[in-house]
Length: 297
Length: 170
Image 1: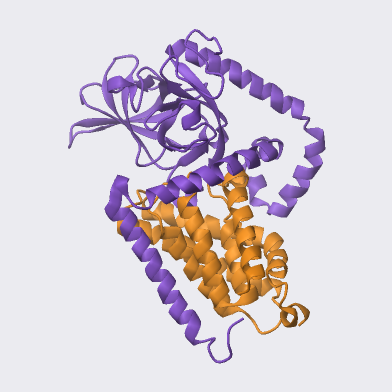
Image 2: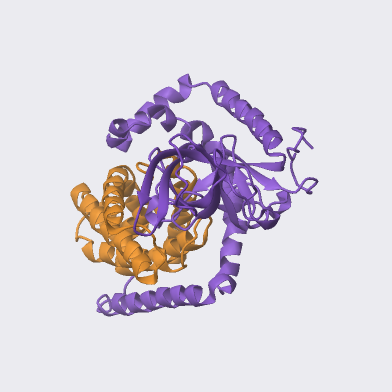
């Protein structure tokens, strides 16, 4: 493979070349911003790999649903070999009927959510989740431009706000979760109608929390108050009145005269599956759209 | 690297990539999923040397940078995995690759790759996590990668070193 005598020279040169390529790529992407020359490549990768991700998720769904039954720190600490042995044992026992019944119940609740919010929803499934190693909390869903989904649309599930659409391909869309450290959502405390900003902490899982900073420092939210979205002009990127979470702790800072509350989101982000993308009523879509009156169209 | 080897390696990267984002993300621990792509890169380096390691690393990293749901500056994973591939290729022992050597290499490469990715994020301002959180993520990912490597890497090394009989037989 490597020519005799060249084994010390070539790898160094190649290493340098590849590292420089990477640095160039990062620079191009950084300077370009939204119109970066890397964006078409990203779109292409999404078009090609998106459907494969969706197919892989469908095939693996009965298996990937299993960890929810075992999800505890001690059991996950055991090595993967043991987990896989358990998986294969339980694979037979856990009839897929259970799984399908859960999914049906989820659809029912999503229909109810559409009715409550008075909006039309495009149902979609989460087909890929970015690992924490990438330090951004994003997921891929299996609905894209053909389903009527576009950038800056609100994504909800039966429990509440999930996030917003960042970019779409024909069959998939990338969703920024509200838990991402880059995510800022306008929030309103349901009790007092006080407004503020919800920021993610970049942590997913059972300890995923949002920070609410209220504009009016005199308003102190109570523990247990429900926070809903405040809404933006034209409903993009967030429509108004979607439940986000509940206040668990409140801190007042005298120095910069703001009140900070910690919000526990209603949505369980570690077990995200069926979501709905809020679209305008009557949107053309490649699948049944849940209309505001709960009808499927 | 002949066409057959390149094809096998790229196929392994593609399968690893899809499994990683669609299936392994459900097995995440504290949100950290084992990095299957890194394991393919390490296997390529261990079985075929630094040149292969780096090329496979670049391909796998580029794919991780572009395929949804990635939302960071493109080139960061590519850089991290090129370095991991180089390190793995340099470690390549003279005889057959034993399990302890494999696991040690995976641990080092995982540490290098995740740290390079995290540090590039810090330098470029593409990262909003504090340093303590970052350290925790790096350590957990090393643990998970080593655990998965025990199962996958010996098998992958054999797959990728097909056609190089003196190493398989040694």
